[in-house]
Amino acid sequence: MYKIKSLVVLLALIFCQASTLQAQKSKSEVRSIYMFGFSASFSDSLIYITDIQKVESVRFQDKSGLLMNRTSYSNQLQFYLEREMNRPKTTCVTFCNEDLKKLQKERNEIWNKYSKDRSVIVKTLTKEQFEFEPENYDANQ
Image (cartoon, rainbow, N blue to C red; front, side, top):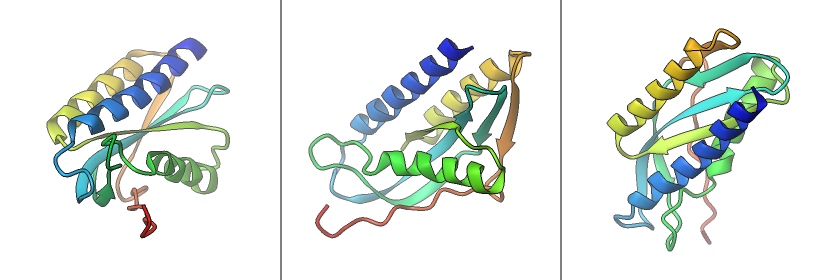
């Protein structure tokens, strides 16, 4: 179970980086992106997956094309789970893409994989329960 969760976290980070590299239109522009969050704990079998949400006003790094402050979006989900759901020590990953259909496919694959596993409980967090907030960017970034 630990190896599976570790692999999912690693793949999620790689996927997010790869998908933002594809989004190199005008890298310094403020754009919209779609994202969803995934949360797992190594100490229990409860997994949370958020609905896909459109997040406005995100920025990408000029040279790499990577989403700026991408870990802060995962932290938003982690803080929500700690405060509102009393779920400390979860590992949270944010999946993102400018193409909604590609992101829907990715979310469906993850949902199907974990919902078939009888050793885990998969719960959805709706937009009404949890919503990603655009990050504030320093003028120097």
